[in-house]
Length: 476
Image (cartoon, rainbow, N blue to C red; front, side, top):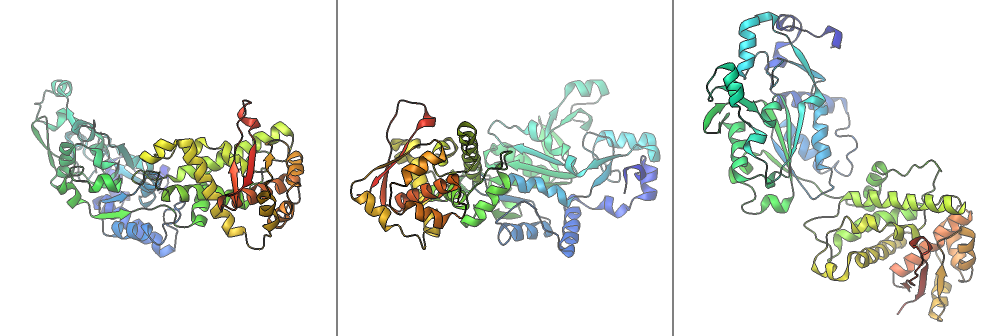
């Protein structure tokens, strides 16, 4: 229905709008629209990757069952994005009375709605609420109060209207009533105080609650969706049992299960298409993505906190930026190199929470270890057919190699000192440009170091960080 044809009064609405649509709940509305999408073969939750055979089927079942649900998972697993995409299952717009809680014209709840209908009848004005306006989200914190979620008694409003404090006219509505006929998402629900959790499930199930000691009945039509960290949600005392019992479906989210899935998500979300036409070799991108996978398994990283997919996104963006900076500084073609990951360490140190052992070693040391392991993983996928014995023999004879961060041609001259390194780089990288060959040569060296075939050390300089050198030496 176009905006120009939408009813503006209750009388027009009765003549032109299907009444059965007004009588259905928001969960029924979402269910009907989901069924229509499934029949048309549409993709559900576009942009959400790696969940097609796990989270999405469970979520689809919960919606078909008209459940309130909770997404349990660590940070950076697209939980909030899923909640916000639930609006795609709602009608484009629905009619409502112009009241605080968007009353259904056929099922009014607020005193204001009853007064409007009594005074104006079929001339009562109708407003249309778009699907995006029907989503309300709250990040739960320990200081969240019942008044924040449900409302409070407003003595000034009561005085103006000449009503008692126990009257609905005296209520200042909170977030949940304002989400009436929509979706209310609560992130990190386990952080809510127990009394707030009790008030929440009480008004959802029984339709009543006490505000400042006054009983208030509100049969709200709200679809409730939660998120939480599994450890917080299952810990005793974090979540009250009656609320947990009233949540229909508990759906577990997860990180990408393969390097390919993770890289696909990262490339979808990251800003790497720079104006200079930067070239990101596939092996550099894979090594960048592997950092998050390595970190999630490292015993020095806190498992209960998780390693967000945002680490990979931020890391590849900083790698891109360093390649861009180097190209602008030296006049080279912008090509991402393994060395760029070491200039992107802030994306790692700022996003991993360490256990005691990791704290003792320091975030920078842990991050560098993660990089080497990640290069070892990425190199293992691409090392077939590479003849690297001359390279390892060179370092085993006591030779050292220091590579500058500068122009590609100067780096390439240093690489030519190592027998077999340029040949391995050429086999790995089809692009014959100096910049691409340097990237491939660095990847071979980092991969061998990650595989412990050679040792990687660093020299300390008093110069600025952009003149940092890489140094490779023989393994133990």
